[in-house]
Image (tube, rainbow, N blue to C red; front, side, top):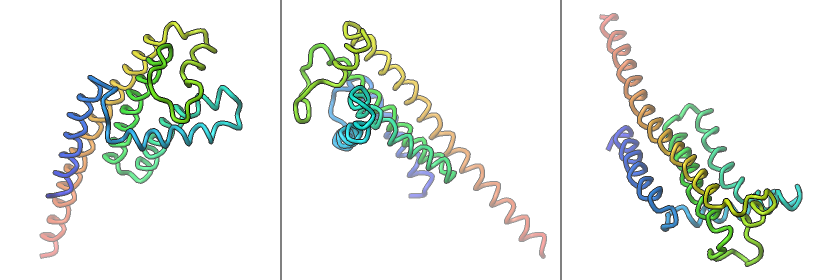
Amino acid sequence: MTARSGRFALTAFLAVYGIVLLRDPSSWSFLDSVDLAIHETGHLVFTPLGRTMHFLGGTLFQLIVPLAFVVEFVRREDRHAASVCLWWVAQNCWNISVYVADARARALPLVGGGEHDWAYLLRRAGLLAQDQQVSRMIHFVGVIIFIAAIAWGIQAIRSAARDAREEEMLLSADGSAGT
């Protein structure tokens, strides 16, 4: 399998798997345990910034960590890898939307018990009664990011193939010019 076909297979998998997740974001995802660990770490990281930032920190970290990977891969000029990490941001938006939708119901099990992050945050913002609307908005943002990630991944694959063809043509032109 070539690198190009492997990247295409990964992008196709993420497209199909993303559709499954966006249709039912509460279903299990292979990234759930990773996302949960990052979320809980975010609480620790943001705690020194006050109570509100403590509650918001878990969600922020769920977005900051994959975005940091996007930035790093862009810096390394690996746009396909960056698109995969952008897909992870979308998946996190859907994950977060489930948590936000639970703000009033508080039916989701919480790590260590305690207060529900989004019940606290939405109550503080005067938006607790709008938890479902806020959840749908976050889910929609995830859909837009998902579409962008898949399109970017496909574009990166095509661009890499075009660059490889151009390099091959240059090399063959250099080789024939020397004879």
